[in-house]
Image (cartoon, one colour):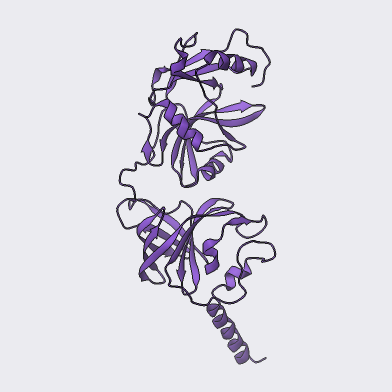
Length: 356
């Protein structure tokens, strides 16, 4: 084969790849192993170039995939922290391979060992309008159920782009998580409250106090003095993935239970852009329970309205230090030692050598 012939064949291959915008997508996937749609044909322009979808992707690290229909494919970006809700912050958006239009409705589990392995769910979907589309800048207006407004994606280098919200905040009343919060502390008492119907009771775990700030699928921690600390390995990313796009400030203890460190979560002081410091303890606990936070390294701690004597006896049977009584109508007082929370030592009938 002559050099001229080789050059022509290479140009033909390059032109074919340009025509087949799904070549990279197909090259990364085995249709016999993944449930993802893997069409055989090259992309054929169809539709109105107005479909968008945001998929929550629990891969090796949680992220959100923004996909926009354009010329017969879904042009895609991986957004590690999700779409920004306010123009005050820009989020990284990594341009990935084009996806087939069928992917706009895909939800499922990509098998381990396959590209992008992990659970994929649709976080939001709808239509969008194009204001500008170039190789370096994409301006759009999104119309979705969970997110809407004007956004711009702009290229910063290579596959890296940034996404910026151009409209005012989606929720003008939303407040960001505080940078630091010192947890509320109980006073020590020798006896349980007399009016037990006005109180709820939790186990005292005897662990290390940790406040968790969860946002954009990531978690950071502070200690009982509000100082930044490292969380146990793997806890932060997994807890962040459990909450997904919901920002939350959680209060709890890192306790040793049956030989394992478990983050026992017993309060929520900020959720979905709303501070809950003035919300009564009962309602905060109900909101915390509704999050259904339960994993190998974290659990929502139980709480028991009313019968403190039974909880105290149960704590003694488990070899725990005692109980914490909390008034059902009490707010959350950051950094304060409050009589609305009372630490009561274990029952005199406590059996030594119980589980810890």
